[in-house]
Length: 318
Image 1 (cartoon, rainbow, N blue to C red):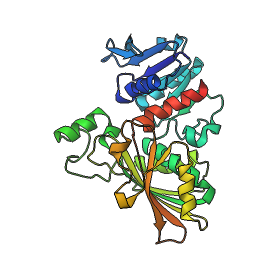
Image 2: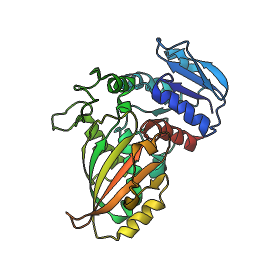
Image 3: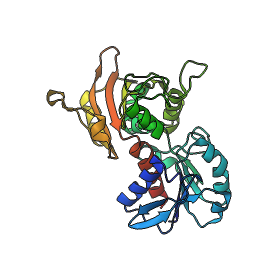
């Protein structure tokens, strides 16, 4: 396939390149696009140097099969219509098209069957991706309600978030992230939730194909560089055997169970960093309700939460 990456100089763009290389993706021609500021820089892929080109409308006249969009919502909103017009398949990492009913929102381990012949595919929110990978195998027990509490690393805010963590500055966050846990990701909405929380709520329903599912969320920024964690409380329609919960998760694609509390084995973000798996542990009954469990989930938010999921979508198309 002829591949292009928009936002190739950024963290997600560079990680897409890394994942393409690691997974031996069959790339015939590669085009790397960036802002005017980064244009001219050189990036190496599979032993060959490529020069970053400034993103302009003329680039969509090239013979490109798949374009990864990793440059933010404004860029996606402006240029994805051009890609569609030229018949180029766009895999978009922004939130612009996620809730468009005509655009599939894809996590390959969960809903690859929702992918047909579309020219635009949306990549979900990073915390949503890891959560639904762990939730999908439990759908057969009849999920009634989901409560998310996230613990999200500063890399989710990009390079400026990492700088704030390292320097104690407040260029990205309203308070010093070195010293605080902030129950505030993205802007607050009129309903009291943040935009990030509503993303998780609505995206979960769409990916799991269940509009009636009850979902709520609190999203929290924590002072670590990379790796998101999510505590998930699940209420089922009927009773279950906890052994069957473990078995379903053990057999699930992309899930690794780390749950041996006697030896202090449970999911931590340090283990998840640099990998593409979703780690699940602290699996136990919720004794405050008749048919509930708690579980703790971690993943690398830049890889599985963005870059790797995008590449996995492209692999389905290839």
